[in-house]
Structure formats: structure tokens, C-alpha cells
Amino acid sequence: METVPGTLKFSVGSCGHAFCSGCVAQYVAAKLGENVARVKCPDPGCKEGAVEPESCMGIISSDLLDKWGFLLCESLLGAKRVYCPYKECSAPLLADGEAGAAAIVEAECPHCHRLFCARCVAPWHAGVGCREFQELGQDERGREDLLLRRLAGRQRWQRCPKCRMYVEKSEGCNYIKCRCGSSFCYRCASKVSALTHYCNKCKR
Image (cartoon, rainbow, N blue to C red; front, side, top):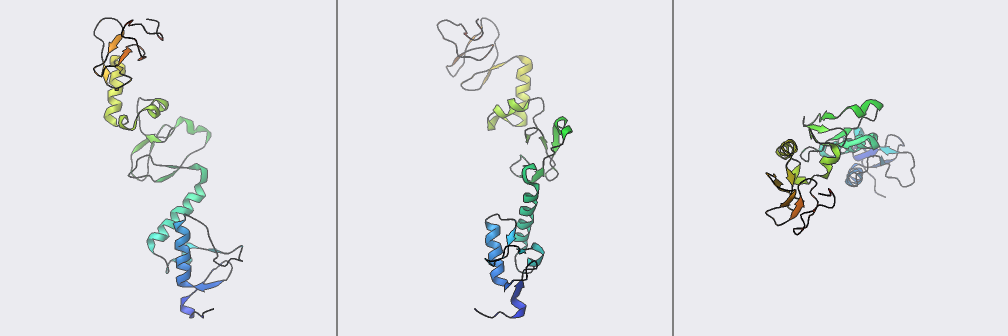
């Protein structure tokens, strides 16, 4: 075993075990790389000692210290943790699990200041229910897409179940043949035979 000068020694405060500062720095970096929040004493026989972030300020980088703080916050939040739904942000947030929280629908991320739905933790979708929003494709969730969806609802437009384009019936029966070649019922969007023009679901 090599003797380490006192200036290069690192002592684990909770148990008193001493190690080389460089070795502890590598050990802590490896544990943080594994997303471990509570870094135990490097001594394999020690059951109670833990390395604290404050004691490592001079031996690991500020980026690693930030990551450690983030991991500790995440471990404390546990099951109440949610993330901002915007990919550019993804900040960890604390979900309010109180009884009255069901009434809160519109929330603002304190980091990026954008609105999101507190019920389904998705970008804010005014006028569209959570279940309906979750059924939308990723390319249909933009603000303009949601506005178009609301307009289509008011105008009673229907969407082709195959190509997803909106169509408007001007006259005639409920049989629609879309420009993509798909045949469907204007009332319920179910597939309809081009021969009968009859919808088995609507019975029309």
C-alpha cells in the first residue's frame, strides 16, 4: 500500500476512512456516470459511510457537482417527479398529488415558462381533451394543428381514416371517396363499400 501525503488525502466525513483524493474523484465520477445519487464510502467493508458533495468540491468538476445535485433532487422527489413535456427543456418538476390537484389543468414550467397540461403532462392543448390529445400523432400536436382540429369540429368536417386529410360534404349521401382512394362514412369515418354506400356502424 502506497503512502499518500496529507494534502492529497481525502477523508470520508461520516466514517473517517481515508483515501487518495484522485482515487475518490475517479470513484465518484464513475458512480455519477451510473446515475447513483448516494455515493457510499469506497471501503468495501464500510456499511455506513457516504461521500458528500460538499466534501468533493475541490476534487471533481462543477459539471459533476451539478449532476450530483440533480441526481439527489431526483432521488428525493421519487414518484412525485414529472418532467416538462417540451424536449428542449425536460426540467424535473414536482407533481402535486394533493386532493384538490385534479382541478388544476393548466400549468407553467418554472424553467422554460411554457404552458402544459397538469393532467396528462403534455404540451398545453386548449379545447382538446387529454385522451383525444394522446391519440393524436406527434405531427398533429402543434398549435396550428389543434386550431385546425377545433375549426373542423365547428364546421363538421370529417377526416379520412387513411390519409388523415379533412373533407367537407357539400351534398348527397354519407358515402365519401377521398382523393387517396379510401371510401368511408362521412358521419363516423368507418370504412364503406364503394358498391353499397351503406355504413354498417351508422346503419345509413
